[in-house]
Image (cartoon, rainbow, N blue to C red; front, side):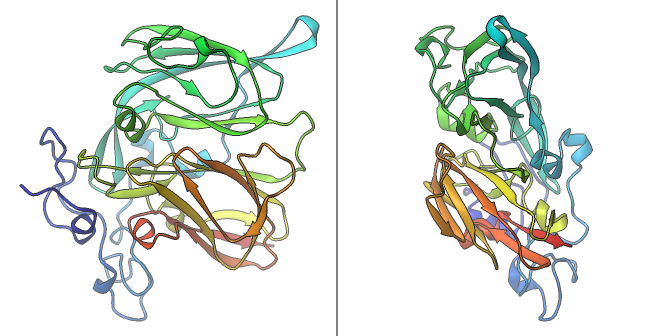
Length: 346
């Protein structure tokens, strides 16, 4: 059987097959824009595509409860860990993170055999303040070897790579990563076991925020992790693209924000098999802080491009009420799930 390309997946017809021949969907969950007549809206004709753009077929949604996570909840879910005060008045933050293998419905009728942190994609957003002592107990409940590699500054033995410190954590085993929180900024963590691209693409990643010593101005804060799903396991690009786990989710459930309120977006790109990703906001401009390691913005823009592993903070105030689209400015990514809406209310 010929490999299922991204465009063939968009058109539909036939199951998507992984490397081992496992079927991940009885039919395509997406529809071509040409299927919808003029004047309709996404899903109005039962196809979910059209002049107003593609989305899932009418009535097609994933089962968030069965998945065990919800993209909208991930937006504002910050895990500050278990906090205690140690000698000298220093803050200690402790987390327990586990790896597990999960069968996740990533589009209606399309299931993906994921490898996860804490049974969700992306993993939990770990948050602390610069100078805190961090202690992460990692337990590997997966059938595959894994590690946790944190971006930031730490000793070599805490780097979560094979052959150094605890090295690769085998199934059923645990280890503890302990290091100081520095530098302040927006970071990420992911598995660092080979083949690295597959371990990341399967879902082994999450956001790691180190706040500056003096807090940033109060804001409605959101986490947006840009990623994809290579459902054919051929390492030749992705068939679905998403923010916070599920393609198109924020087209169905727009992100709710308030007019003139400061909105702070922690934007992370962990997409594998494509060299770059991007974020474009309609009808508005934002201040952009690359990696979040400086308190002054680098640019005022409506579009940023990030390579794999890059991240940055976007700060915006919406002066007008209404719905404003956001999406990848590579149209193919948007057509395959990387798009959504902000709904601005008074």
